[in-house]
Length: 308
Ligand SMILES: [Fe+2]
Image 1 (tube, rainbow, N blue to C red):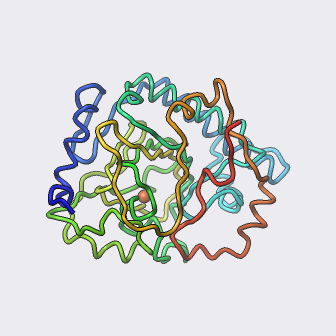
Image 2 (cartoon, protein in one colour; image 1 turned 30 degrees about the horizontal axis):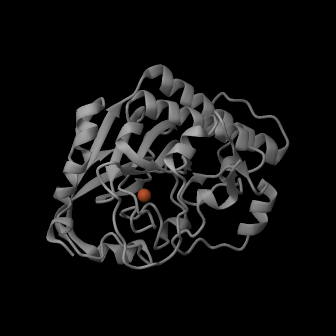
Image 3 (spheres, rainbow, N blue to C red; image 1 turned 135 degrees about the vertical axis):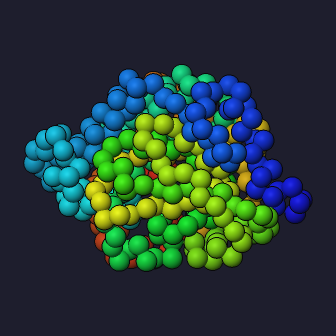
């Protein structure tokens, strides 16, 4: 493999277009924060609240009030079948209308902030509801509380864009950059996150997740969920491939294959097309009832949806 790929510092230049054309508030090379408009962030928060509340109402068939709902209904939220241990909170038949509103508005935000122009493609939005309490599931070899690169989880783009939105800010994410070179195996999908730790030597802390900003972190940015026995935190994340790149290349096929949707089709969602869910919350519960979540997740947001 070419030597320049093995030095993560050389990936910093991929973000030059974003530096020049977008509202960057913090630049740490392979980690960039961007300011977002207050009104847009407030609206995105409301859409995420509506998405979670609609899921609760549909699954438990009772009324839920918005005020303080992440604290009041913590246990009920954690028992919803569309939520994976990583916190990923998937659209199902019952809540897909609210999901479409989120995707449509995320598209608007990316457009307004001149980000769409910097991307070759981007994925559907993953809404995450992360539990701040440590559980047995956090000792899994592919728990998001372990240091990892999303390339190890199967991503073949360049980076993830995330926005912290609701709940407990202490349930955070820690971001780190690698010092020195990486192994040629670094960008491969790994059997688990512990194995991935063998593909680099040293790292250094950059920042923790800031709410209300867009944070773009490269696949060489090692990160983990921080739990301090706090409350739930809601954030969104989106896999992106930059215009200046074709994404990280993989030589091996391992684990999940991520379906690609063209950028022009993602941008139509909520305007000309809609995302449809192919299973209900109950069907999802039955499908996962014996899953011990002891592998790198093979299910993915695209698996149970189609764009109609
Ligand atoms: Fe991750």
